[in-house]
Image 1 (spheres, helix red, strand yellow):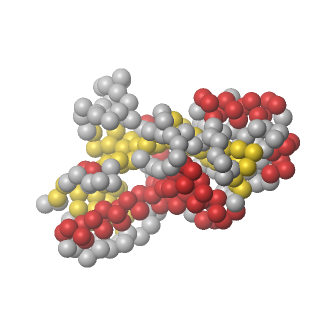
Image 2 (tube, rainbow, N blue to C red; image 1 turned 180 degrees about the vertical axis):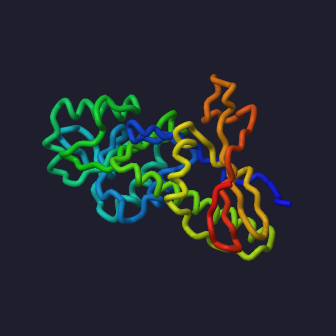
Length: 257
């Protein structure tokens, strides 16, 4: 019989809006996001929407701070994010193009950082940004706009794989089972969860089941009878397990059950 026990890895909560290509999440840190999108997709320059830092540069035209450190941008962003509860940004390609932004565009970007939502498309031809990363509720949740929503599926697959490997590592320490690194979760499998992601769902690693042959992560949805409940509520009165995301340690394969 599978053993179920509480895990320190916690939950990943996802709500996908396919109209705006945005995702509200809880349990995915900036570090997770940066690792999840992969080195090839990492932005090299970030326009900071609501934070001022001594190490950041100031663009005189927009009055926004920015960091443009190439390969060092990732490490610097992660370090700065730890200093504040409101670390929102969008990426850009060339500093010179910041000076080409109109007053209307600057106002729209200010609105993004202040209100956590868009007035018009949050993707600007001048900036060529791939992402808009917003912190909500003093860092409790994140909202990310993706120019290409495929990047979200890739990021989520990578983060879930990392969490499962962490679960396995913990088991190897305390259960003396030889640790096995999971193969990366196929992006195609995550895409099949699109209806659940649109509804809002939780990957609850705290309710994971682990045996010598497999790791199972429950995918939870809210009670359809409780319209007042939010998938982001800390304490949902009922746990509705819709599916199990399973990794076979024997076959090194992922599946949904």
